[in-house]
Length: 182
Image 1 (cartoon, rainbow, N blue to C red):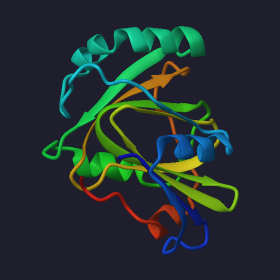
Image 2: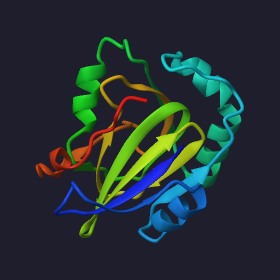
Image 3: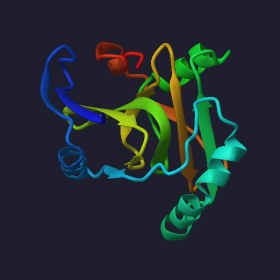
């Protein structure tokens, strides 16, 4: 079940509010400019699936997003608990960073946790299969996939180079809860 927890950015030990209802999550995130939608995952995909198979299964959704939103590049991140580079990949995303374009992810299997640092609040969003999240460009955030990652996400970009991050150097991510293995 998808989840949103909101904290003061000065205290990662005390959650101010928590939501499990998708509409409530979408409402809270919309108020800070974050897109959060529930989409159908009509094609069974397992973590570790080949990117080509994932793109083929969701080609209609991808094409619609690319046409409607102007994305030019798509890729897939598909990680299973035995992935040989799982620890290095986790570390890569765990530090607070920004992007010069929106970060758009459609989770087609498993789960991952986006944590957004907006003004004086931290928004921790557990995304699961069927969740589409759009983090606006310039938003400070980090992503966790747990020590035993298990997810498949389609990533869409306007930058042909794909995922390009600017790290803030702030150690805030280490002061907030990490994603627990599902």
